[in-house]
Image (cartoon, rainbow, N blue to C red; front, side, top):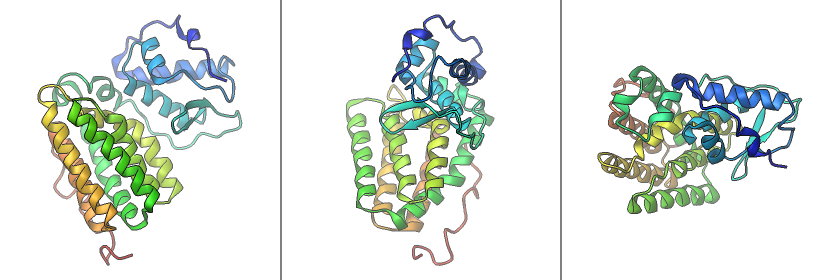
Length: 273
């Protein structure tokens, strides 16, 4: 059963830009607690929620991520967010407040001007610490199905770039597929959760207006290099290219990461497990 989107119509527009995702998650949580959304109900779509609250879709993703880590909802690939059973326990807590300004503004002017530089730096530092390790492990363990999913997301981004469309969602899918290729369910859960917070940085890379167009082309070239390394089973190369990608996106957002961040060997034996 799907929750009725009309029940959101009386919501006033939000007025605290620095805490949009927190306020949305709190309002939805109160409705779940009141029984307006019952266990098993599908929440309204991102688009419906974004329109109801007067915010961007990345902000809604932040709110859903918060509900998910509080154990209130679960997400299903391609199906949306569903109210979880009452017995479900909260999992990892990761405050989204620092990423909300970026998520809400990524489609606007330059990120270096619109978003808090310290918050941006923290997001990119976290990506630089985690994503290369995931990429290296994916290169060692990826099977044909994983590579097909990665290639599909890569092709979708290519098509979007060629037609001037934003493909941040396909970008998210690409990185989620890398996590899936590790075969480690905890890695998948962590990266799926953090992906909601990383979406804002990917929106920056995929802006297609004005100065954003070459940025998107550079980001996509980095994706191709990363895919090639994973497909070849080259773990160290995948790690290096993943780190180069994060550094590239950060630099294009006006953020310079420390030179030694993420600079550690994947294993003493390099590409060989």
